[in-house]
Length: 346
Ligand code: AHM
Ligand code: MG
Image 1 (tube, protein in one colour):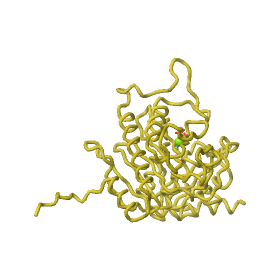
Image 2 (cartoon, rainbow, N blue to C red; image 1 turned 60 degrees about the vertical axis):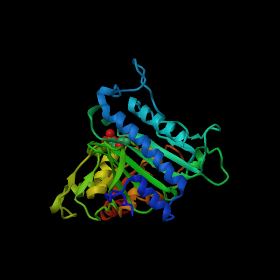
Image 3 (cartoon, rainbow, N blue to C red; image 1 turned 180 degrees about the vertical axis):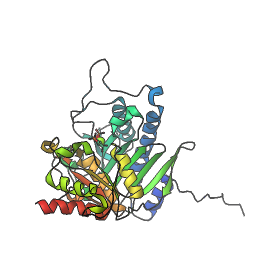
Image 4 (cartoon, helix red, strand yellow; image 1 turned 135 degrees about the vertical axis):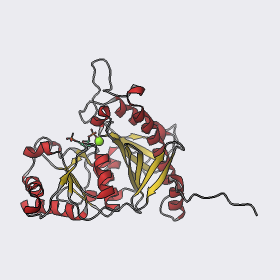
């Protein structure tokens, strides 16, 4: 009898997705959609990795003319490149009805010329882009929803579904290694890019966030702008083992949400971007649909919790594609503690 090919036991992203499909947990279309997104992320990873050699650092727009996105932020060259890579890769996948991005004013339906499917894809093509020019980790965040029944050419309103409706969420972190962290609603799993082979390989099945932590992530320079509950909460964290929390806390802040959340999925912690006086009129700093929601699903699927401080993040009913929210996510008991400070002030 022929000798079967030796198996290394290694599980590629492709094999993982096929197994999920065979188990009836995802459709073939969703499997192929994730493959297309993962391929686009590999292309972005290559562009990010070239750094100064690729001529990709700095602001987009050129010669004294900054390019400004819908958020009123100056776009980096890599913001624009990453957005184009995702749009182009997915235009011909045939699994989507429409796409929305942090970098685009409105969602775009798939054109009549391209093949279509029933999913909606939302993404932040390059999160943490203030870190690009200093060679610190950045990432891509994405979320997949179903296109409402009967809608063939979706508009922004069709994307306004709560986070509980996500069928898939993930991010890629472009750090010392490139990793894809994914959930299709059956746990959160981490894949590391094997750069020689070009495949994402499963390296952590079932990421689990410890319920307790001694580590928090926040931009402390905003302290004087915070509202009372956040002042009280962080005040008690800083008071350490002699304070009401009875333990010393450490602080970490990369200022790339992807990197901060990746640390929390790996070893626990709480990530916060609260309301502050600078962002209160906008509702917060981080965006609900393509930052907070996908990250919240990944965190919940890893046993953690995610909240606005007053409500479970995934239950927020979106009213605007680029809506912003306060964010508290990570170790379950710590998020519950932060939420308790908010309720105590209501
Ligand atoms: P971006 O999408 O424009 O990159 O902004 C989002 C980023 C997050 O990655 C990060 O958590 C936060 O903004 C950092 O904010 P700050 O500069 O206030 O520390
Ligand atoms: Mg972002």
